[in-house]
Image 1 (tube, rainbow, N blue to C red):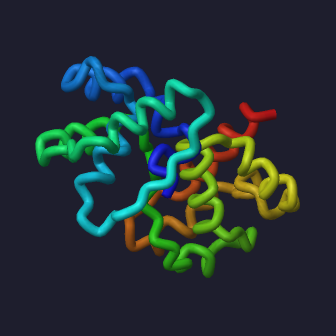
Image 2: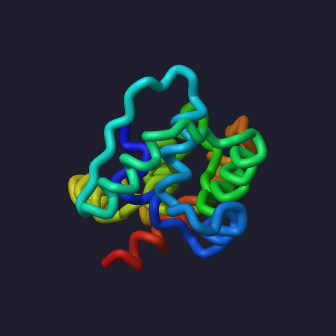
Length: 171
């Protein structure tokens, strides 16, 4: 469901767009998501939200034939994805929380920071507005007590600082 993630996967950054357009210049970016789904044997139904007659015609055309992505095209999709995602690999083990003198929920903040960098920050704003100042990434005092406890080797204070800076740009 939602192969285009509410339109997010139909509007890529320039680098990702270029990678996919070089391989199939006549295809829309959205068609890559639908063709990828055709390559998954466990997917039998795809629901697509469409807002124009053009999108409806394209979807009918795409699903009128079996044209799944090839392994080579899946590699192109992986390359395109890498240009879009700058995520912090937190596993939410929570070891860092034990050492935080501010009592921050560091995994939650890292997850939110990842989400805001990848997707529409408007939705995240509702969650952030419900948080107190003491719960936000700006409450981090950058003491670094958390970083040595992280099994992923994440240097947490700069990650929280970047998230805090991203939030400042939203306001």
